[in-house]
Length: 279
Ligand code: ZN
Image 1: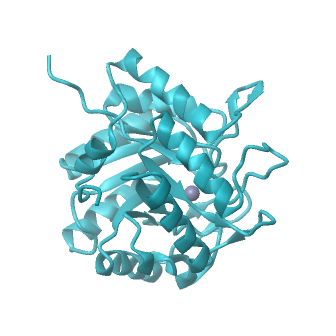
Image 2: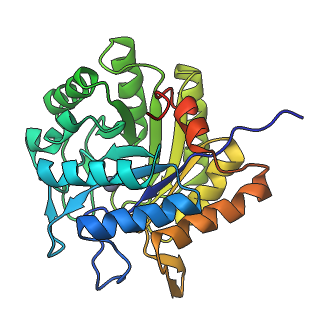
């Protein structure tokens, strides 16, 4: 039997929404974020999805803070893939890409607009093109955030036009209120559609909220990669708060064998995503 694809485990350590009141383990300061990511790295995560916060927990898109975080993660988590969020919760317009000159390994790129719990998640075509061009200029691999099917098609079109460097990496996001719910048949269709349109693409499943583990299981089963972390879900199960990002990562690590999978090493994760080997 051939060795199945190792699983890249992404840890989304803080995001911009969860507060210490929701779970005291949510890392806020740069120091807390580095420490929490390091624990998650030791537990088996190979990709860190990063936002930055002010010390009072409010969101910011401060390039300086991103710079400090990227530098700290490179020092404390050698080889770990560092991905910054260019999402719309922590800034507006081109502010959202202000940290790209720090050259993280990856950056998130939403390729369309949708509704979020209390607002429109706005990604105008002009902004998408600008963020993609910045990523090309700084040699940063985008992680396409697909909140619905049209965003997968848009990413494929952008790759064809040379606006995104192939092979694509796409994250299927489900469970955000007012966007695509956690739905098995849709998820399978996403995976099949991406495979049909871009056979060399890789993908990750991200379940936001209470169904996080459901999406982890589907991703392991269908040969994709997994995302977990306090940004998406602050609980280990319905009744228990997650004590750390590392605890959420361990949940995924423990599920891998059930699906004949194992967590990727840093070197494997980089090779799977066509990223350069760690310096
Ligand atoms: Zn995020």
